[in-house]
Every structure is written in C-alpha cells, then in structure tokens.
Image (cartoon, rainbow, N blue to C red; front, side, top):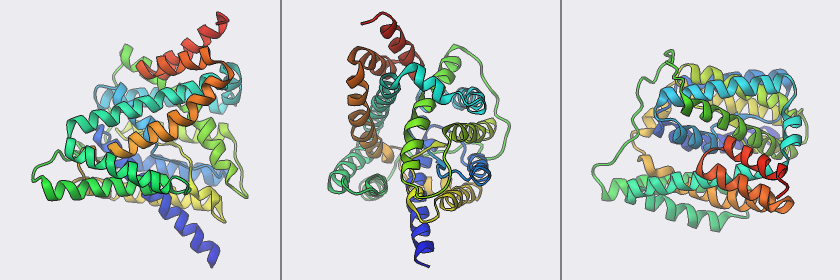
Length: 352
C-alpha cells in the first residue's frame, strides 16, 4: 500500500510540473486536445518497451519551436519533419553513434545555447506584461533559492510562480492578456515548407538529440527496475510528436521524471502519461488558461534557462574544448541548435 501511495505522489508531482508547461505551449498557439494523442502514444510505447523514461511537455522544445516558427503552421511543420528524422535515427539505433561523432562538448553546448533561448523568451514575456511576468520572476527566484536542494524544486518553482502571477493579476489588474486557444480540436494541420521551417526542423533534431541523451539518462539513473534504451525513447517521442503536430498539437519530449524514482517506475510513468492525455482530451487545459496570464510562465523559464540549463551545461561544454563548446553555445543561442552544431564541428575540424 505504501508503494502504491508513493507511485501516486510521483504521478501527481510530474502532472503538476507538466500542466504549467502545457500552458506555455498554449501561449505559442499549439492546440491542447490533439496533444493528448502524443501522451497516449507515449503510454503505449512505454508499455510495450517497459521503458522507465516517459515523455511529457518539455519547456526547451516548446520554447524553441514557438520562437522559431512564425505561426502554428510553421511550428507544427518543423516539429513533424524533425520528428520524422528523429524516428529514423531511433529506429536504426543511430542516436548514440551521432552523439559519439559530435562529442559531448557540442551536445552540451547546444543545450546551454537553448538555455539562453529560454531566458530570452522569459525576458520577452516580462517586457510584454511587467506585472504578471515580474511577479512570476520574483516568485520563481525566491522559491528556487529556498528549495534548490530539494529534488522537486522545479515543481515548486513552476507551481508557486504561476499561482503568484495569477493572484497578482486578479488583485491589481482588471484586464489581462489571456491565453487564447484557436481551433482546439483534431483538425488536419496545413503544413508550410520554407527555409525557416527547414532550419527549424534541423534545429529540433539537434535539440532532441541532446535532450534525449541527457534527460533520458538522468531519468533512467533514478529507476530501480525497468528498461531504458535511448533509441526506444527517441522513436516513441518522435511518433508522439508526429501524431500531435499533424493535428496542430504541441511537441512532447523526454523529461527528467520523478516517476522513475517511484517503486514501480514503468507503470508510474505510463499512468502519468495517461492522466495527462485524459486531462488534455477533456479540454481542461484551455479552461485553466482563462485564469492564467500568458506571462505567468516567465519566472519558471528564467530559472530553468539560467540555473538548470546554462549553469549546468555551459561548464560541461567548455571543459573538454572551450573553443568548440563555446562556439556551439553562442551560435545556438543567436540562431538555432543545428547551426550551433555545425559551428562546433567546423571549429573542431580547424583544430582551434
């Protein structure tokens, strides 16, 4: 009975962490109901493979896709075609070979660069809505520094900062920019092909290579039983993204999940994905969004970008080869992860 209760608490914690990031996806115009398909695909995939690494909303990928694409059509197109490429990589077991080729300095450099992209997105939100964004940032920083030694610090940070932002808006501001969800239903998404989308898709591939390796391995290290294969994770998340984006939904990727530390890590992860899928398909998330200002996620993005991404990945990128890791980081931050990877490879070939 105690084990079941621990499983349930882990599931609730990961769901609570996922819902505000789902709100982030809505701010970029993704539909919530079609995204349920991604979670159900993930649940089926993990059941078949007995994988301990689940998938859920991931702020890094959501923010990158949302920033790289000009509208839902561009964003979903780059997610879909990026997922097709990643599915082939996973199906042929090529992910570890690719990481071995590009090296950890480039992989960490890409992730650190994405951390800067997250931070910039947070600052843009704060500039757009100083009340909601400012309160969110202050609450996130205070919560993080108080709970930073707790394994659930990001859960506390995201929940408290979003709630504080909502309360501040309710008290001090009668009118606020709410999150508006358009065409939130299963509807074939019209794809757009242009240079921006192609570069965005390649950037999605590079970002997911880094996140699948890092987030997946961290989650697997927490599990006491079950299986973990990064290529299985890549294939499952890619099929999930293809299903979701085809109908206008958001990307759903690998995460660092507390369900892996539960007594039954596989089934806790599967249950979490089923719960998230049910919440989305019932249309609950857009109802929550009516009471949540669009900039309420800014504080969490700032903390995630600076303290949990740049602060951890930048030193790792610079340790092996400062020139390679540094060039990858900077180019990723100002363009996208694909060009960042290319820059790192070029610098390495030049022997700098």
